[in-house]
Image (spheres, rainbow, N blue to C red):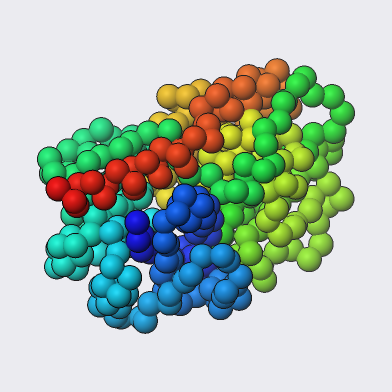
Length: 338
């Protein structure tokens, strides 16, 4: 099959969409399919151009749809695969669907209803969300369709046993963090009362607020560039809800999840209540110093709870999402052939 992927990365978009799509593209190539990844311009692509084993195309600003149609025609594409919040016009999708299947992966824009196939790799807080889709759209929903990056899979899970000694808590917001959640959490965290705890703050490669990182911090506080392997070495993770939370769940790490906007705060709450595998801290705008520090103190006081969270989280996320999504893509050509 010839598969044309649209996956933006860098800046406010972050990198989660890209790395899971890269793994998918590589797996599709391994199975003999031809894949091209397309994207709009960003500093991430400028720095990483030609460093991946998947061909890429940069789409010109303001002409993304026409450039996509041309490129797909030239490669005789069977599938348009879109990952991320990328709005598409109805006319554009109608043109694409004349010759190709349109698959949206977590593209929850208004354009979602135009897709032939819609994959939502999570639990949506409102079931009526899916009522908007016409009967002609195939919908696949649930954590079983979650795509993990190769770096996550290679790290593997960890066992969290009863804790002894110093605690090591990772605080990570990933990506560009435009709302500066990382520094907000730092400002309301009580570092002095928890001298037996090391607080490790991790900022993303495209972090937009590096200038606001304090030059001087307490001995038990550190700031470092994002590293999943270093985060894995910690005992607990406080993270903004999104791909990082899922990755840490797969790794079997106890997670305290913070919503950086209303939509993902709702999903975080849903995941917490349904799986019992994470602790939901709610929307960051509503998170008080008292609540944050009381939950951290509870974690330190009840290490057995962390072992329970670890086991539950690891049981929720498996590594078969890649095979399930590949199967959906491969099956989609049969529909076109009909």
